[in-house]
Image (cartoon, rainbow, N blue to C red; front, side, top):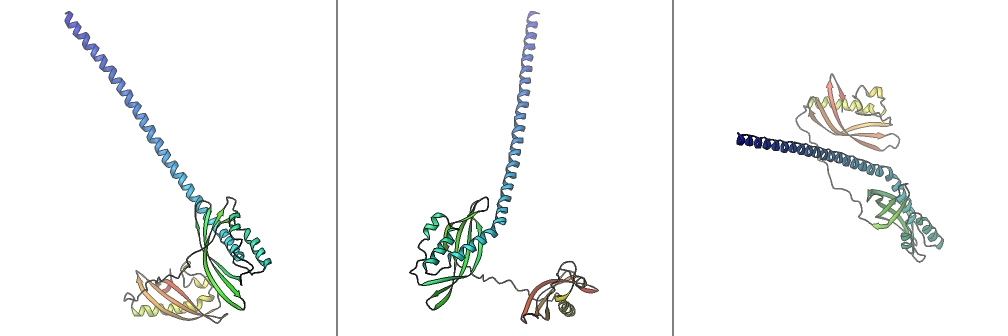
Length: 300
């Protein structure tokens, strides 16, 4: 009996110990889950916060470009007119130096002291300044590329000279500007050799339809130069073509090309007008979508 009671007591103790261990394990698991959930929540919060901050930064950068570009262009144009205008008299050189100093840093003012001297044989007048590009370079600086058309006079000879340059402009937060890089030679802008692919006529539109649509277009363009909105509404759906209210006389359609587009017909063409004020020929190009539902109408 004694041994039996002792074994029972040991079994009870073992069960109690196991019960305590199981309880501890559950608390640890709960604690780990709490830590895991908190970590994931914090990570998600930081992720969304980072996205929001990035979006705000990009918006500010775009607004800066849109707000400042016109100001930078005018600033550079005015500088160029002063910088590239000179003659070799002492008074003119001093006036030029004074004028450009309002655009340049002190370092660049010193750099340009001897660019125009009294012993050079030429004088220059600026005929035109074209701004080709303004590109942001860093937070507060912009690179402006421009072309200067000068008339150079040397003795009795006069010639026109064109050259392309760029400068770097620093813009303060309050909008004040200063040139921080001297006019530097840049490649000239060239005409692209790109040619759009010509639209070719096909058999998708029959001859009778082409003749009918051509007659409609000729009638329309005779009226179009002076047509009011009310008159246009008979020929045009929506705002496909706006009134021009011009003093033009229709002459002819030039190379109209028709292609089928479902229930519609697309036409690409040029229209020749005579300008009654200048007497010159004016050629406008159009790409129109036509639809016939009883009568023809321009729908796009």
